[in-house]
Length: 247
Image (cartoon, rainbow, N blue to C red; front, side):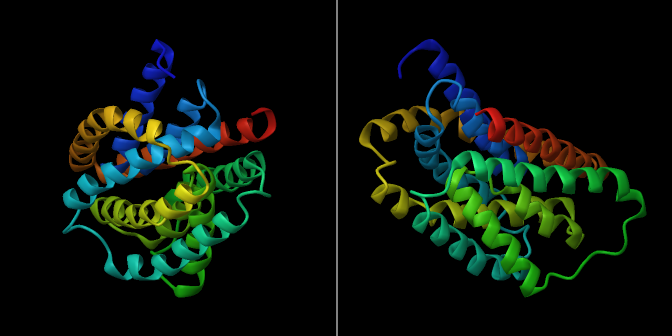
């Protein structure tokens, strides 16, 4: 795992992880697919978890004053439940099936968002029923392949949060999600010493990308920001569908 192509893919994946922690969540889903070009998806997920967790520290600090406490409060039980289901079913659930499922869900939602955004109704209320359901799905898909963004966005985008509140709430919720995966990943054998050494090298591009992402969120107009989120969700979902069929 020390070839030029591995490090190119690793740095690109870490940079995408950092951008996601800076407030552009769909980029985080590109990490595992990028690294899967040179190593197996399971190994890629294990290698990137420390990068996610380390980047979370800086992302949470950046958005410490800009998030919805109500949304995070509802999200935590679902996130933990979804991660538990992912842990218990890790040996029987196919990664291809999970990628195909969330790819289809994300594509449908992104297309609906792009085609109907101008005529959408007032912001939805953050209710426990929908919140726990979608965050459970997000916790599960995140555990399997760090792909929790589509289910999360399906619930959160209609809530009408401001640009910064959306970015901050997403960053903090996913920090909780990633921290909850440390112990299960360890017992599943995905946090090996060699992985931690490689991850330590990838911390730098990830941290740089956190602050680049944060600055981009601050300067991008709200409408453009949410359009970028929708298009990234669509592109990543299409990639997941491809991986589900041919990966």
